[in-house]
Length: 415
Image (cartoon, rainbow, N blue to C red; front, side):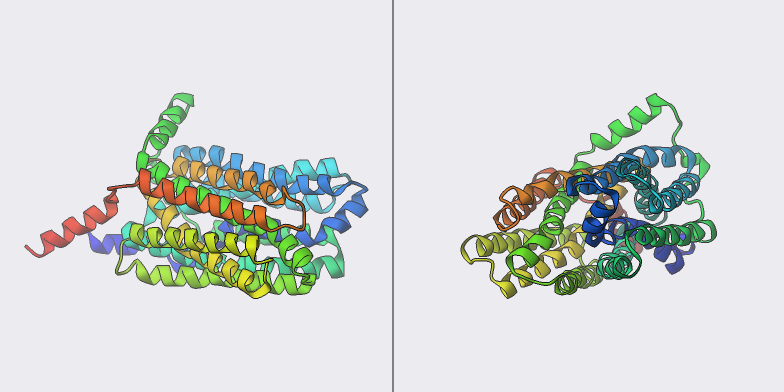
């Protein structure tokens, strides 16, 4: 039996492709942020209309996961993944030639829906193929590889915008989608057997969604990840103004600082991947959430009464991002494996709430204008505290099924 499991364990090539699919979001967002002023001038539209292209992408990403996740439970993982990746590729090409802001906004929504396939199905494939601590390590490895995206995307995007213009950014995204499609076609095999697929129809969809939403432990881990995402998007949305307008960093120095903070996500993920070998994923998750609450509280105090000092603020931002490495991989694993019978739907709801709360939190950090960091601190601390409450109240007493199975197998082996 163990050998069977070993043979079905995901290969590193598969994990690399899944990580690339999961990285479509930071590439599609971070690569073109520096092009906003150029896009507004070229398309003859105000900055608020350009920002709408980001909002519609996130909306497509969130809603697309709900639909595609459920479809993958019915038709399998591979077909929806191929169709979604092709849609993302086509939309990226068309974005590069969009003549008006209205067309670009619509295409970004389609791009988000297509990209959602990779995000939601990547998590479902791991839930299909791995169990327990192995699944936690695979989520961590996938996230560790994916950390390169938010680290490199702003730098690559800035270089493309400076030398070739904003339209070339979408050309680069199209090339990325083509690479993703080739990876899906040649590396990603079907992971959901026909006998385990759920029947179609609205009744079956409602049944699947109900079984997911009524699982208290799943909701607890999902809300933990969603509120953590809200805190992170608050940081991402506010960081350009805090670091450049308040601290006076140049765009180049901002990119380097942002990238350095993103590196700590990789460090946190690597540490978490080692810890789950000797500690339960839930315990590692709880440590990450506790650290996030403490760090965000210190950051709030610093920006409120400290006048936003440069190095202490940046250091706390880096520590905050490091906490993401402990939280994301373990929360995603614990949530999706809790509803393995409907992993696609479970991954879809998780993704919808993750990006939905992030989209809601992002505007909050600008309530006091471009020259105050207090809303950022309040948003990050409030979301971190909400994540801790959700984890403590909704997952109390939970022993993941995979851990129970491993414990039982261990006790039987000693008899």
